[in-house]
Length: 430
Image (cartoon, rainbow, N blue to C red):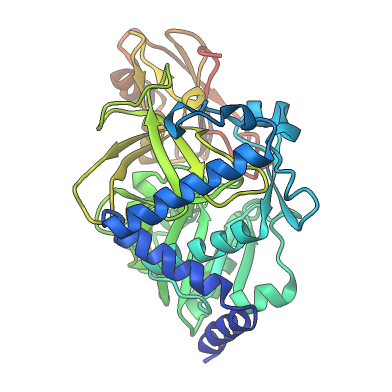
C-alpha cells in the first residue's frame, strides 16, 4: 500500500509542478522505443540543431564554430572543459538556477560542472524510464549501495517519497551484508536493488561462504552501476535472488547513457537524451561498425555547460541490429588507461581480471601492468586460498606465455574517493 501511495504522491507532486517529469518521460519512451521512425529522428535532429545554436550564441568556446557542421566540431574531454571552464559556461545560465555535479573520476582528478533545471528534470525522467525497463517502479523500496557523500545525500522527505534505503559502499563487512539481506528478506513490498557492481561481488562471496541457498525476497529489479559487472556476480545474483541483473552505463556529469536488456548483454542506448558516436581509439574518425572505439556523446539537454562531442574516456562497440529501437552497444569497456596489453603489444579487454572470481578465497584483487611484459596481481585472501601457481598459469593464457606475473598479498586494496576500488591499473601506457 505504501508503495502505491508513494507512486501516486510522486506523480501528484509532478502534476502540481506542471507535469515536467511526465512530459520528459513520455518523450523518452517514444524516442528510445521508436528511434528509427522519421518522427523520432526529426525530433532528435531538432534537439541537436537547437543545442548547437545555443552553444554558438552563448559560449566563448563554441562561438568560433558558427559555420561548422556538427560532425566537424572538435572532440572535447574533461581536461579541455576543466582547463577552459568559463569558456564552456553559457552566459544565459550563469545567473539562473544551476545544479552542481562533480566526479573524482577513475584517475582521482576532480571534475565539476553544472546542470540547468530542464536537464535535471530530464535526468529524473531518464532514471524512471530505465528503472521501469529493469522491472522497478517509483514507490517500490530501493536498496541503494553507493558512496553516500554530500552530493548524493537526499533530503529526508525526498528519500521517503522515493522509498530509498541508503547503504554505504564502505559498509560491506559480513555483519553489514547479513543485516542488509535480512532487510531485503523481511520487506513485504516490491523491492529494487541498485549498487556498484563490486557490491554484488561482495554479497555473492558472502553467500558462497555461508553455503546459502535461495534468499527469500520480493526483488523485482537488480541494476549494477559504475563498474563492470563480472560474470560471476551476474550469474550468482540470479542464482541467489531469482532476478536477472542488468548493467547500467552512466556518468555523474551526464546521466544514464545506456542500459542492458534482460534478454542478452546488449546495451540499449539512451538516444532520447544523448547523441552517441564511436570514434577510432587513435584519431577522431568514425570507427567501423562492430569495432571497438572511443565512446563520444553529445548531451542534448545540458544548456548550462554544453557538452558536444564529449569523449567519455570509455571504449565501446556499436552495432545496428536494424531494430526500431536503434543501434545498440554490444560492448562497454573501461577507459583506455584501464585496458591491458599482452606481451605482444595487443590491446585486450580489462574484463579478464574478473576471471579471478573463480578462484576460491580471494576477497579483493587488482591487476597492474608494470611494463610491456611485467604484471602484478595484488590480492587480499583468506586462509582457503592456495592456488597462486594456477592463477599465474591461467593469466599467462591471456597475457602471453612470456608474461612475468608476480603475486603480492595485501591487507586491502586502496579505495578511491568515489568509494570504488580500481581493479586494473596500466602503468605501462602511462
